[in-house]
Amino acid sequence: MTGRAAEDLRIGDHVWFRHAKAGELCERVDRLLLVSGTEVVDEVPTYRGKGRAFG
View: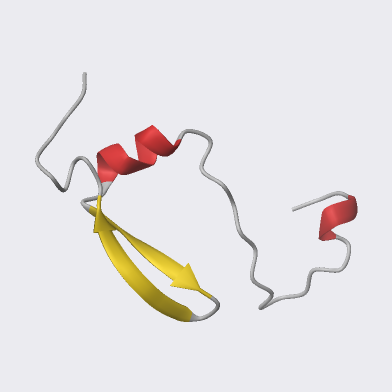
């Protein structure tokens, strides 16, 4: 990473990237984990996990 936002980052820091197109991500996985802090608080199926596909 480069730029002003990256200046204070150190090895081991958490960095969150947002997927450019959420639909593409959901085409690849069956479920998503919902996280709050360091705890997984829920698990939800994607449309792929529900056996659906859009083309």
